[in-house]
Length: 308
Ligand SMILES: NC(=O)c1ccc[n+]([C@@H]2O[C@H](COP(=O)([O-])OP(=O)(O)OC[C@H]3O[C@@H](n4cnc5c(N)ncnc54)[C@H](OP(=O)(O)O)[C@@H]3O)[C@@H](O)[C@H]2O)c1
Image (tube, rainbow, N blue to C red; front, side, top):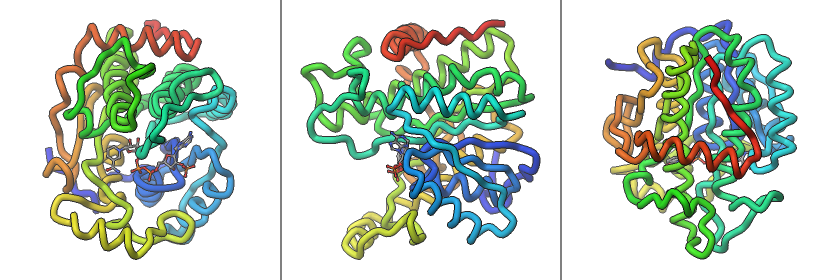
């Protein structure tokens, strides 16, 4: 199973929706998918940043088919509206669940429903979006849901009944636990899709260690300071640009050999071309998966039944 990021399959006719697509991995995945011929929908919370990203893709990929839709994944009302917009579409071949807080606040914050903000952004909004937009995935043959996990999942415990981090919050815990929960959700979704006999694959990926200071500069999308470039370049031996990190979700979206339940990451763990990777045992644990699903339904107030 090898993959050349410079020679991806033609994606004409496919519609891809990318959350948090105005910057970082999400932007570069969108650009690469547009270059492959897909119609790409950038689901972003800021109309200005979305427009800058759409313009950048049009500039850099002549003939790109690209548009934007408003989505703040930490706002349940916005998620509902975005799902309604997706349901108007004839097809959604790939739902790329990328948006995330990668540098959580030092102090615990909550969304309008009282859910811890990093969990809300990195997991709850995507759970609700997938549940509400599910019918359009069901009517798209061979649809894929791609979830962004992280190497951080290797480095943290996962006290499943403390997802809201009440009394145990720190920014590292918040990030690591949200990413473990995201991976758990991706694999639990795969089991439920298989059990229901759905023609939809849930794939989990991580982009290694990808920094903006090692990423091409693009107006309105990636403009790191000189100091940031200098600091990030000191770590060049084990890091890569977010344009390379994006290779992994692009492969998950387009490789015909990828299957539901696969886990992909860079070949050299933190960097490199995408390859199969090993997910933590916790991420794939059925009991943990069932419990997390139950909690996500409770926190979002959103039932999500994958019926045969
Ligand atoms: N970079 C890495 O090394 C790395 C490693 C492991 C996993 N990941 C995962 O990869 C994904 C992308 O990371 P990145 O490094 O590309 O991060 P990034 O450069 O900070 O980009 C994050 C994107 O998510 C969007 N976002 C944040 N909160 C949002 C919200 N409430 N609603 C909608 N969009 C929101 C941001 O939009 P705004 O511009 O509006 O803030 C931005 O477009 C994340 O899920 C991250 O956990 C990254």
